Length: 153
Image 1 (cartoon, rainbow, N blue to C red):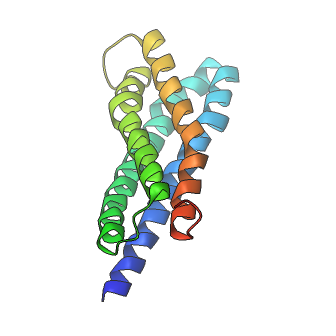
Image 2 (image 1 turned 120 degrees about the vertical axis):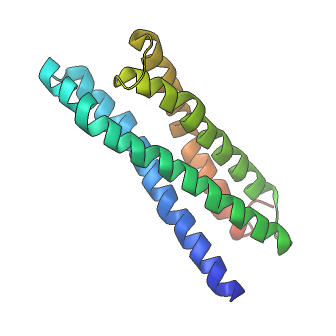
């Protein structure tokens, strides 16, 4: 039973994580660049239809990646396999999730018109937090993978 739960939570963590990081890269490398070049009608359509839907998946994938990660962190520590790699990966993942919920999402709500505020100020705040998450994503993934393979003791 313990093996099955381990596989289930690792699988869920990977699926949610791939969804989250995939959307992170989509926002930073595809949607942002499109919006810079799009006609006003295209921008309005993205902000009204695409961005809210993609941001819903983005923030909940971040939350469920984090929650399944907490379960796995507890599991790893109970098996005495806790190491520097998993500590650094968990720290980066936690900071990334906090960026999503405390900086990116509140500011993106303003940008896409779901909340009142200064769009000109909110956009750069969300963008900086998103680029920070992009920067953290590969080292975080490295530490997570290396920790289970004994490379980051």
